[in-house]
Length: 139
Image (cartoon, rainbow, N blue to C red):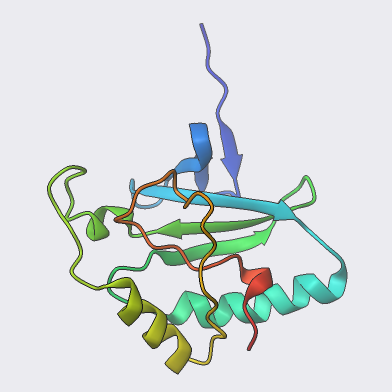
């Protein structure tokens, strides 16, 4: 039986539950999807993505790619998840507290808001810190 996999942004294979596989590196990624929005929102997201993509904050997932896909969805793909978990899903822990991550983002010019009490992505893993959706970041 053949299994069809979705190719995302010509580089990532979508898996279940928002997870994906980076075909360039073999690493796991988290794929965040949102409505594309109008041209002004798309332009703003692209500007914010350029800043967020350049950030390297210990304990924070790295924005690997972001764009509109062929189906009119805005996609944000975050990688570096294995490094934050110490390379082993059950053993490693990053030592950068959330307060420090938020302070570094604020110093980089991001308007960092208090996170909601809703579920965290990916899943509910407390070891993985993702930036808020790019549409919510003000430069």
